[in-house]
Length: 126
Length: 148
Ligand code: HEM
Ligand code: HEM
Image 1 (cartoon, protein in one colour):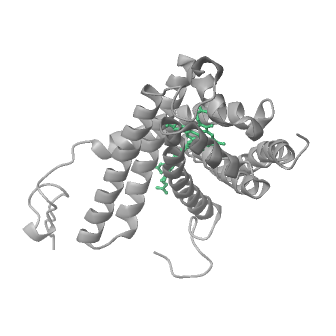
Image 2 (cartoon, chains in turn green, red):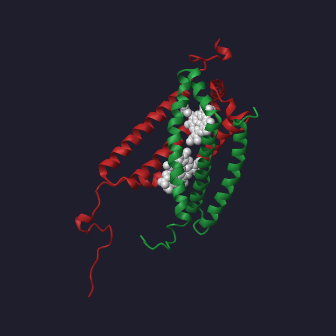
């Protein structure tokens, strides 16, 4: 592996950082999912207990956490589709950088739409 | 001067360079393929889940036991959540398995971490499936109209 700071085609460039981002978001979503199935299992135990847990998710502070989680999911999803294109589409490797900018563009737009709707619902209005 | 170098995998290598005799078949290739196929399906399942639960009506404010009972009265949502549970758990477990293989260098550490991972996965998948299949709208504490 190259030790020069000018880097290689991959190391320290977009390709590496999108990989780091994909890995970190994957682990975060997985950890959330373990907790999420456990708390959903309360529907099988007691309706009030389930409602009490859901009430904590409705707290505006938690809404910020949910927004961050969805940001991670959207990045992992769109970047995952990019990885699939790079692997299966003939021109994929050639355009992998352009695809990454596309991912970031779509991500910003979809995330903004989600955040506006979710935060305005969570912070009142209703 | 010519030197004869055996072709890789010609089985004429110094035994100390020959990796374990057991072949994993094409398991890793299938896992690679599964990550991509499940990824495409998960985009639909997760976006649908988030949209139905957070974006429609009053969004997160509408979530409650009654909301879940309403969704799971419909077999489409039962199937949706079951597929979501299985695919995301298998996809996530396989992803974390890769990460453990990458970073845990000691053989024993790797074996332990993967053991814990698989036990957790089986537990969550079984629990989540049972919750969907045995859901009871009139469980203790339920104040739904049909239970009174
Ligand atoms: C903050 C975001 C989320 C909220 C508010 C939420 C809410 C819910 C609710 C209310 C249920 C009950 C059943 C239903 O509505 O279909 C549920 C079940 C479920 N959710 Fe989510 N969810 C979120 C994110 C996710 C994500 C990102 C995943 C997947 C990675 C996921 C996977 C599941 C699964 C597998 C079930 C079924 C659990 C079981 O079998 O017991 N959820 N979720
Ligand atoms: C939203 C749809 C999703 C798509 C399109 C997607 C796509 C992908 C792809 C293509 C890979 C690459 C595998 C490889 O490099 O061989 C991957 C890795 C991974 N995914 Fe997903 N995924 C999705 C959802 C999820 C969910 C819900 C979780 C967690 C439960 C998750 C956790 C992971 C993890 C931990 C990795 C391993 C990362 C690594 O090895 O660096 N993904 N995903």
